[in-house]
Image 1 (cartoon, rainbow, N blue to C red):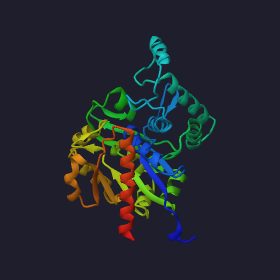
Image 2: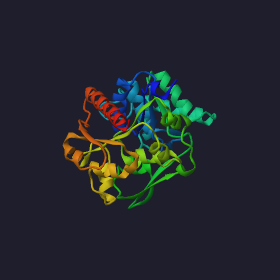
Image 3: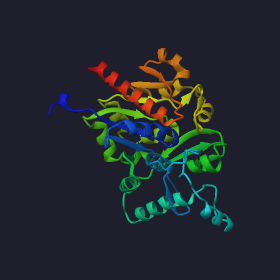
Image 4: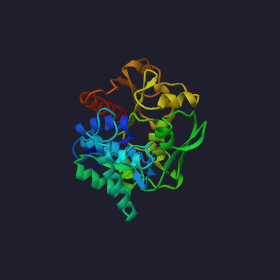
Length: 322
């Protein structure tokens, strides 16, 4: 089979939790079955109550399985809280809430990890059992932990994000273990696949969702050398984050809060960039090909439409290259 005859129908997405999962769902609905790989941030994984918790991975699992809570964006819909109430009565730690249904995934994952099974095998099995029609791949099977340097000192990410509700001022991020961690083989294989149509950096927080992935050895180089277009969707709309602390972090780091700052941060990784219609003025200002779309994604139709526009943009960029 010649290079020209290879059908380019595979899509690779890099994602964090809530915001990224919205676009991942849109992609899942329009990409042919078995052709979408979502590489999930595992930098916010942590151990809590003796359990291995993977917040971004689980948000993707629940979202792509149709089990997500539409009100919060995280956790399972129809959740109950008997465990947390009983734990509180015993004086246990309740700052990180684990619903009764959600608890099952943490218990089973921890049991299998302690038995020596890699995280990626466990997530693949969970995805199969939950009916997820896409491959969710942890960025690595090795431990990487995001830490945040704040006005209160260095904090583990979940302590900063959940327990402290992002209140302390941020000055630096660290991805402990990233320098020696190995990117998952399926991640690298997806980047180098001759069938790859596009790489999509979902609208996730660059500091805590995407940069832990990019910190893994060889990942930036592989993305820069990829033959498929790399397109990012801005997580900032009209100078504010749709959800989460991205804008607050930018201000505290002394960065301009705007979609252009995210593009500058990704730098030469990008072949194309998508901003919301409210930032359409950037289309003519940024040094890389940029288009405007509805990046707010309120409905499922919004997510699917943004996914279609993203892949059409990738096809256009590929044609310009040829």
